[in-house]
Amino acid sequence: MEKENLTPARFADRLQINRAVISHILNGRNNPSLDVVTRILDEMQYINPEWLLKGTGGMLKNGFERNDLHVEPDLFRQTPINQREEPADVEERQETLLKPTTFTTQNIGYKQVEPQKIENRKISQIIIYYTDNTFEIFKPGISETIK
Image (cartoon, rainbow, N blue to C red; front, side, top):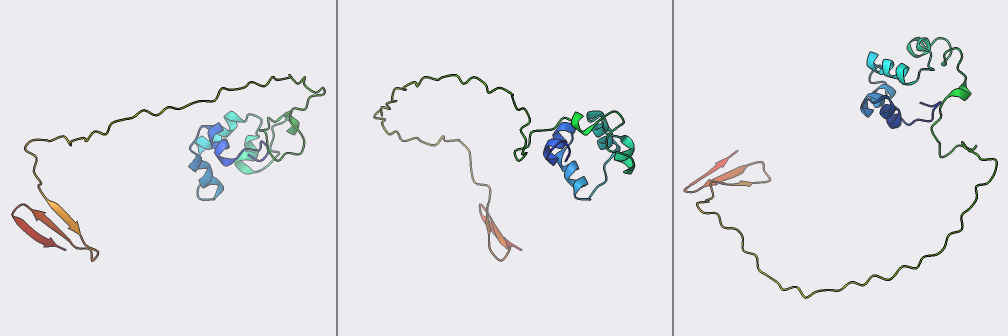
């Protein structure tokens, strides 16, 4: 992750695994599963499997050099990644005036909306909760306190 300037989230996205998996590995909660190790080796074919699994040998396989690595752009890097030898031609732009937008308001009449009435609809119960962790259930014709 460090060599390619990847955040844990971007590393997880690149490996197409859940971000929590990387978080748990980095925090020491879990060890990498075989699936995670396999995805790293498949995605980053320049990684030495012996280094990844055992921590022995070099990080890169023989024939790969650090300059060969694809590096994600870093906002804090001191050297530009893609520096051109010649400055690019700057195209002159013309200013375009925009017409001001006018909004008109319309006199909208107020209309009272009646709630939709549903026939044969009755209250079956009302529950009141109190701060002392008790409640009362009220049913038509019946009242009781339950603790």
